[in-house]
Image (cartoon, rainbow, N blue to C red; front, side):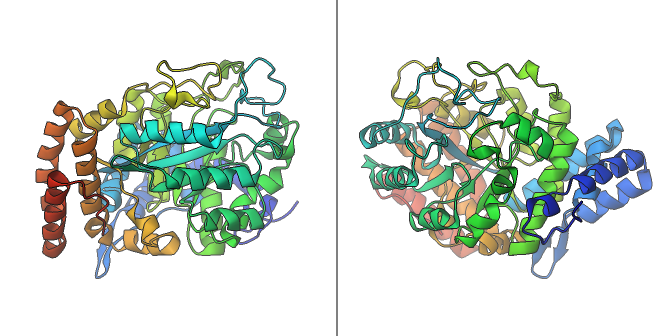
Length: 482
């Protein structure tokens, strides 16, 4: 068997089954080692330096010990540390986005996804460019500025040319004061050449969920189609980075395999990207398996309760302190609310997981990829966030100013993010309040903006942000950014 090597470009060596199993055994053996756990918590705590704040993070083995720990008092300390790290590096900002499903044609046989090839009763649909325009305008009318486009893997129906044309269409649409300013892409693993094309098209983050790092399970869960190739899928992020995409997003579908195994694999993948490319994942997503069309999650024997899910989120935040973390509308309002303080920095709002769903008055269910638990409107989600003390941010500035990859991470690590992201969040929130918010949301929002000015530490930046927000209120001028 191959040896574990985080710098290797071979999937079986940087996601090493033996290392994962040894790590889990180590974690279970040390989960009650109070002295070790105290050291790990102190190691991971943010430290003030001359350049700002620094966070050491934890290795996959160290993080696994915290996840395995089940002492209630210590678990609360772990969650408290996660909250401290989240506030230190991301503040109280929560970035908003929505998924846009382009096509559910797919040639794969994934047994947990209703888009699988053998599902003959799901309504198959592929959006035309005119239909994409209608979907985007519907999303703009809600107030969205950032999309994540999704499509099944089908070389005939969803070739890379279709994806690229769709991206051009999305970026071209200016409707009233609305515009989509960042398009993230969640499509199947592809070639370095195609990743270069996506980079040239101006995508934000390339997102690809591993689904499961357990190779034996992966092969069974993906019995047919190009996705069956575990190595090709697992090595996709290296090809994406070789193709010039420096913001990549990892994730697993929790519930397919044992959560501890997936957690360790996910942390190892993040370490691999850091070791090889000098920058870890821009985002980590934490979807859990949900019911959908012909998919019953109870058939998979790896579900775990909400309190463990929350601890898992906290441990990811501690281990990989500088990465963005995403939670979707798969989860309920209650779970999302608790997860926000533990490390989540991005959430979707008013999501529809069906092809063409945003132009339908009633939520369609015949082509959904999964059941949506949180079905509130974007305005309701925005108001809810503010009532909990979070700033809903529609900012896309870093991507458009070239602050991606290691440049973004440097900004985050030195703490200078507060002088960019915080005022940008307030300005984009003000755009939302002026153009889309209900009267109640608008009133709550501007009270928050006034309060949050004081968190901007640079007086010059504060003055410019204040003037820009006054201009947003007084005119149709938009898209100010630092």
